[in-house]
Length: 252
Ligand SMILES: Nc1nc2c(ncn2[C@@H]2O[C@H](COP(=O)(O)OP(=O)(O)OP(=O)(O)O)[C@@H](O)[C@H]2O)c(=O)[nH]1
Image (cartoon, rainbow, N blue to C red; front, side):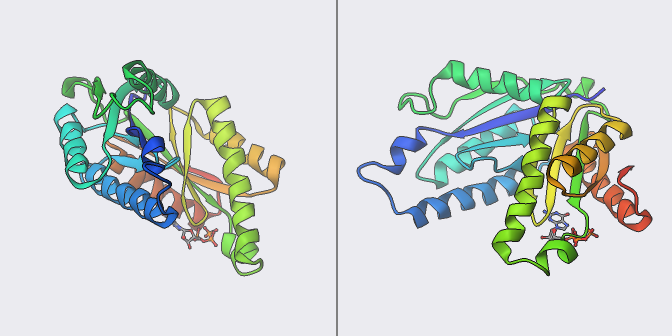
C-alpha cells in the first residue's frame, strides 16, 4: 500500500504583490517564478523529494523522507533570498489526491492565498520514520511514443506543443478521475504521475484512454520506493525497458 507524503507550496499574497504599487514587468515575474522553481527543485531534490511546478505560484512536491525541520529550513532559505515568502502544508494519504486534499485544506484554513496577514505558514504532519516502507511512493514516468519522428521532426514547434499538451491534458484528467493520481508535465514529451498502488492493467487502461481520446500513443515505466528519488529512478529504468522491449507498461 502506498503512503504518499505531499507538500503544497504557495507563494504568500503573490497576486497583490505582482501589481503593487503597479504591475511589475512580466519578464521579472517569469524570472522570479522559474528561479524559485529551480531553487526548490534543488532544495527538495537534494533531500530525495520531487517538486512539480503546476502553476508556479502554487507548486506540489512529493516529500516522503523530508521531516518538519527540512520544510522549515527550505521555507527560511527562500524567505531570506526572495522578495516573496511561501507557505508550506504537508499531509499524507493512501492516495496522492487524498494527501494533497488534506494539505490544501490545512493551508486554506490558515487563510486566503491573498491574505496579507498569512505568511510563512508551516502546517501538517510528516510520516514517522518507524512507519515508512520501501513501497510508500509509486511514480509512473509516461512518454509519448516516437515524439521525435511523429511530431518534433515533422511539425512546427507550436503544433508539436499542441499535440503533446493534448496528450498531457487527457492523461492528467483521466489519472485524477479514475485513479486518484497527480500527473505533471516535466518537459519534452514526458509526464510524471504520482500514483497509489495501481497495477499493470490500470496503466494500460490509462494509455488506451489517451490514445482513444486524442490519438497520442504513450508508454509508461513504473517505480516504487521509500523516497520519490528512488521510485522516480526505478520508473526511468522501467521506461528504458519499455523502449528496449517495445511494451507499453513495465514495472521495475
Ligand atoms: N524531463 C524529462 N524529459 C525527458 C526525459 N527523457 C526524454 N525527455 C524529453 O523528451 C524528448 C523526447 O525524447 P524521447 O522521449 O527519448 O524521444 P522519442 O522520440 O519520444 O522516442 P521514444 O521515447 O524512444 O519513443 C527529449 O528531447 C527530452 O526533452 C526524462 O527522463 N525527463
